[in-house]
Length: 421
Image 1 (cartoon, rainbow, N blue to C red):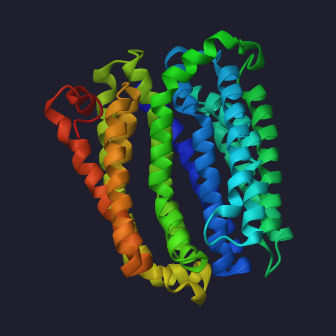
Image 2: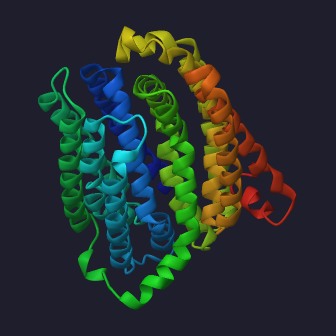
C-alpha cells in the first residue's frame, strides 16, 4: 500500500507538470508556427531536433544511471562526475556544430547561424540535466513540477513578448539560449531548497569518472539510438523535402507528443519505483499489482486518445495552426496510431532498464531504427509527409513484436514483475 500511495502521489505531481508544461509547449509551438510561418517553423524543428540529439549525446546516459542509483541507494555523490562528463562532451558537440553547420543540405544561412547559437545551450542544459536527475532520483516530484512549469511559462512569455509576426530564426535561437540559462540557475536553486545538504553531498573524484563512463555507456548508446529514432523523420524530411514539408510534419508530430502527457507523467514516476523493486527495497508481491493496473490504464488511454485525434484531426490542426497547415492533417491521422505500440515499447524499455537489461533494449531499438531508416528512405520520395508518418507507425509496431519475443527465456522475470504483460 505504501508503494501504491507514493507512486500515485508522484504520478499526480508529474501529471500536473506534464499537463502544464505540455500545454505551455503547445502554446509555444502554436505561437512560433503562426508567427514564423511553415518554412521557418520547419527550420526551427530541425534545429530543435539537433540540439535535442546533442543533449542526449552529451548526457551520455548518466541521467538514467544516476536516477537508478539515487532511487536505490540514496547516493548523490556521483553528480559532479556526471556534470563534468556532460560539460566536456558539450564542448565537443558545440565545436562540431560550429564547423559542420555550413555544409548541412537545404539549410539557409539564417538557420545555420541559429543552429550555432542555440548549440551553446548545451552548457546550461548539462547543469539542468544533473539538477533534475537529483530531483527525480529523490522523487521530489513536487519540486520537479514547479521547475518545469516555471521554465515552460517563461519560454512562452518571452516568445509572446519578443517574437513578432514575420520574426526570424536567429532571434528565436537567442531567446531559447537565454531561457536555458535561466532554467539551469532556477534548477540549482530548487535543488538547494528541496534536497537537504544537496551541495554537501557532492564528492568529486576524477578517479571515478572512467567507472561512471563505463557503466553509463550502454544507456548512452540507447539514448542516442532513441533520439535518432524519434527525430529521424524530421532529419530526412528536412534533407529530402525541405523546410516547408518538415514544418507540416513537425506540427502533426507536436500534436501526437502532446497526447502523451499522461503516459510521460506515469513513466517518469514509474521508473524510480521500478528501480526500487529491483534493488529489493520494496517487495515484488507488494508492487506487482501497482504496475499491472498502471500498465492496463496506459494502454486503454492510448486507444481512446488515438481514436479521438484520428476523428478530430482537422479541427485540431486548424484551431492550433491555421489553414496554412492543412497538409499536416493526413500525417496526424496516421502518426497518432503510433501511440499504442509506443506505450508498450516505453513501458517495457523502462522495465528492462530498471533491471539492468540495457543490452536487450539496445537490440530492440537498433531493429526499430534500421526499420525506420529503410522505410523513410523508401516512402518519403513517393508519399512525402504521409510516407514519413506511416514509417513511424510500422517501426513502432516492429519494436513491439521484438520486445514481446523473449517472454519465455531469461527475461521472463521482467514481464512477471511488471504486470506480466
